[in-house]
Structures are given as structure tokens and as C-alpha cells.
Length: 105
Image 1: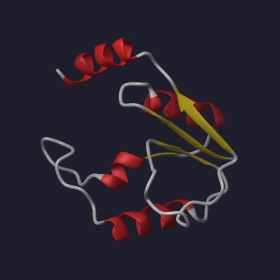
Image 2: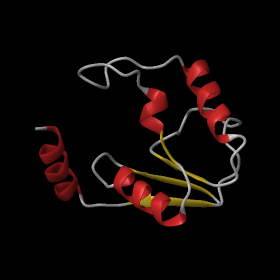
Image 3: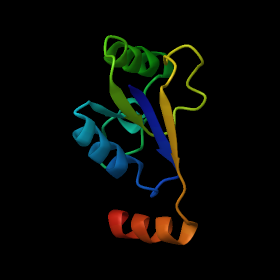
């Protein structure tokens, strides 16, 4: 099963994805790891889109079952196979802001 989970920052995409991946015994991939280069502080430098797409495609192509968390909109139409399940997490803004403050500060 190929599952895509997405939602606004602080909605619990990574937490939900990791728990579901453990329960289903499938690998979890986070779109942030493909989009952003590892920097300190994080989230400063983006990967080249062609390199990013090639990497995620090579990681997922040979697997039948996985979960991908995070936004991948505008990454291109042909880099992902059809998903079996897409989950959108909606969490009220106030809760997301509180989570982000706790996580980031």
C-alpha cells in the first residue's frame, strides 16, 4: 500500500506517519528530507528540484509498500506512482501554533 499523509505544519503528519508505518511495518519517508538540505539551523537551503525528484523516485520505485509524509504539491506529475490512500490531517490553527511553539522554542 502506498500512502501519502499531508497537512499544515504542526498538524501531526510526521507523528502520524511514523506511528502508522510502525503499525503496518512499512518504511516512512518525509518529504522535508528530500526538499531541504541538512543545515544548522535547518530549513535554509533547498535541494535542486531535479535532484530531489530523482532521489525520491529512486527510493520509492522498487517498494510496494510505504508511507510518504509531507507536501509534495508542485513536485511534478510523473514522479510518484498512484497512491492507494491519501490522508489529509486537519487540526485547528490554535492547536498547530501551540504545537509549533512547543517544538521550535
